[in-house]
Image 1 (cartoon, rainbow, N blue to C red):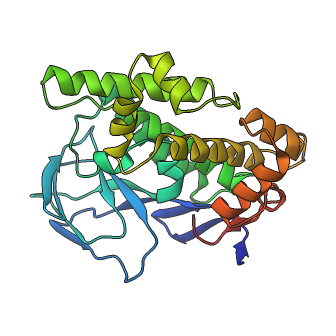
Image 2 (cartoon, rainbow, N blue to C red; image 1 turned 90 degrees about the vertical axis):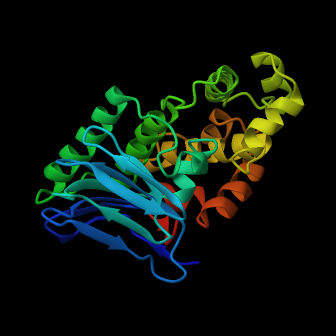
Length: 287
């Protein structure tokens, strides 16, 4: 197992790395930009906010346009093409796939700008990214870069989850609202060890088969999402707890695990690092 210290690094004046998250400003003054991921690149996402002019994008047959004030989510491990008539200037965040998927059910469904961004949330996240990059471009790094990265990913997941369905079909709109109620219920009851698909379906007022179908749209299972969301919540507690103020057992119980040993095994398998390693400031090479 290879571990690395999640320190902030500056590779050029327009790039800031916070642990597993990167924030960059790129493309200014260019009318054409192509990104080709290296073979075997780790799964991830690029969240792109045009700053001056509309940007056309194309990836895996998905095409569209992102305007200033909005954004597009693209796969980081696949080729994509960006074009602008005048200016490609953009803020972008490189998001670890696992971190976003553990926060957002059906993340893949949002790739390629299929839904309409919420303008208020879009403005909040874009300003957060640019302000974070400006603050830490030349100053000392934050005390816990991974903790800050986790908060930015969480805010990004909230923004994407607030997207409006472009299809005016009432049944699709209803599905979107039902999915949000499910996410809210899971988040609220994450610490309850009895939380399971049956309980979620009953609380939200849908059948189990309908619940399973909603998650299947994102190639996920309900139980798998709940487990991964619990592990991500535990990770976020640990990276913010450098001094060990919260016992490992307490972290396990707060996130809905009945057994500390089961929590430790599941956590180590998911993150390729133990809970103690994460709290000590060591993170897996790839998340």
